[in-house]
Image 1 (cartoon, rainbow, N blue to C red):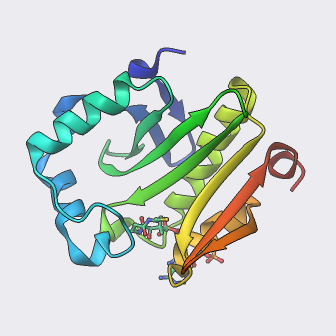
Image 2: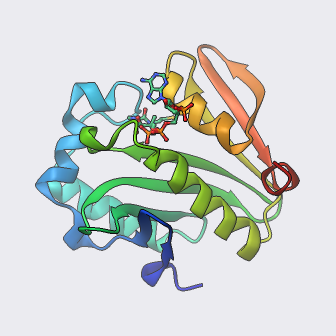
Length: 171
Ligand SMILES: CC(C)(COP(=O)(O)OP(=O)(O)OC[C@H]1O[C@@H](n2cnc3c(N)ncnc32)[C@H](O)[C@@H]1OP(=O)(O)O)[C@@H](O)C(=O)NCCC(=O)NCCS
């Protein structure tokens, strides 16, 4: 797998590796917008920070970091990240951001999970994917449950959900 040139195609969106040219004002504005970063750990960034971030993620062997793009106009609407990937324990943590607010509630988050998880379970030797979402983040939890994630743990006000490979393919 060439992590820097990965492209995974879906019906309405595709996922592809990011390069420093993708560190746009638009992408920067998602992270700095309090409506969008409300449930995120990072709440402030700059284009230079994003360029560094993209480079670091692309060079990290235990990470797959992809942009989410609309098929019809190539608009960058968000990102998906599998990090850290623990190849020994065959698990990974997934994180999703639909940064373009106009694209919320249209099923793109769910479709992005679908395409990446199918790719991951078919191509990498991973058995379990975990994700954490604040209990108030109803949209993030709904996306996870629709895909087949189950509650696994609760740490303070964060719910940890887990998806087993067989549960993904036997929905
Ligand atoms: C959370 C997020 C990824 C959801 O992506 P999305 O593309 O808007 O979600 P979808 O359109 O696929 O919606 C999935 C389900 O959640 C529901 N949903 C969407 N927004 C909702 C909301 N605010 N409250 C409750 N349910 C909501 C949808 O109705 C849909 O359910 P349905 O199929 O039964 O109708 C996106 O809103 C986002 O990136 N938010 C900001 C960053 C963030 O919080 N990331 C997650 C960190 S864990």
